[in-house]
Image 1 (cartoon, rainbow, N blue to C red):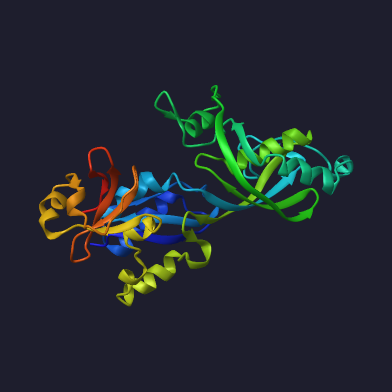
Image 2: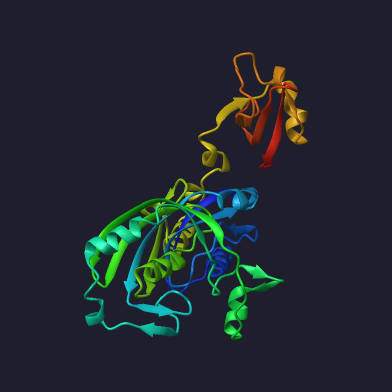
Length: 302
């Protein structure tokens, strides 16, 4: 069984669930999960977790994400992208008052924190029902605004009424909604024309593999070469080897007394650690409690 994370390139036309289902068939393994949905028409990075790596799924959703998006001004749809039903459309001649400077200033003005109302066509649940299920039934419900963080915004290309931009954002940000909100602020409407997720945390699009490439590697018995071990995700945490006497604590996922972490280790309060045994086997992420002088397990990966 494979254990770890694979950097997958999700192609257009597939849901994130489709990718997982196909990988189960390719890799002949059931225990697989993805780390955050991408719309069917969107493409790009989809980290997929295998085996004990599935314990990372909830942690990886917290990572910042980078997208390359194309915004089409002058149109608004019910899905907030160009696949939806057009609610209104402004002729290009009527957009003549829009200047590149005005559009750029508006877009860059969204950098920072802002309250975003999730779209109806999303997988968020209200009273046990997914919003997109309600939307398809012709129902609309009130959604509470959620604080999101737009960490970086860069205009890549402007050819009005189309703008292509790069955005780095926090968990829970809808780029479709960002496009809609930009259009609304400009007073002409806006919808997302295309979306590529170029990065999720440490996983970049340049190393993401398509399903056909993964299948080829499977045939060459090289799948293990593209599985990234869970501890690699925590490269920002210090690696610590517990002494041999701590083995039973590690095996049971128990707290590790500071004295079993080696005399050379100088630990800080709440410092997170990658915990290994003396042989170098990775067990999990621990957090140091200076008051109790022990490291407590945060997430175990055995």
